[in-house]
Length: 189
Image (tube, rainbow, N blue to C red; front, side, top):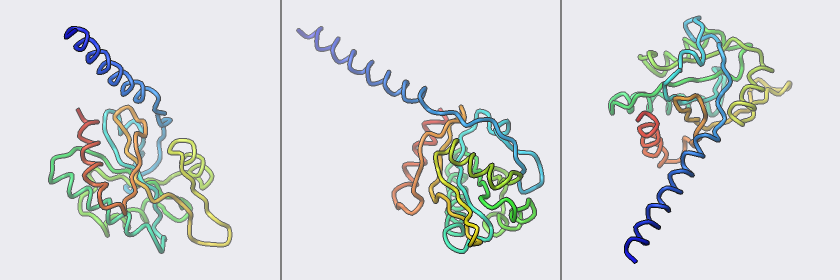
């Protein structure tokens, strides 16, 4: 009787572990990209190989959510650096016609003194970033013709070392930072 319980317990554990592994396999890998960062250098998936990264979508002329989002990214960068958690940060502009590398450089310097693991990227058309966000991150970007403000996600996206989005986080949720830190640590194992 005891051996049956042990076998059953081992079998259930095996099924649970298999389900977790299958979930990882089902993740959609982000298609390779090369854009331009705030230093005017080519930056893309080749620079993120075997790295865990957090992505967000912002623009420098944003009058609402982008400044608090960028402050939060800077806070994460500082916290994770102090805690020894290795992670890269990638901010995609959703207004590439306005956000040149120079504009992005001036913008990011308002929030951090350390750009060593934070790339702000541009170098694509409005149509390209809208398609990229929709197909790679399953999120919507839309630049209305009647406004200077761009509609975009306010979530942070966690990308694993294989280049697949594993989870997204609402940065205004007070509990997300601890969950995000734990998730990054798991992905870095």
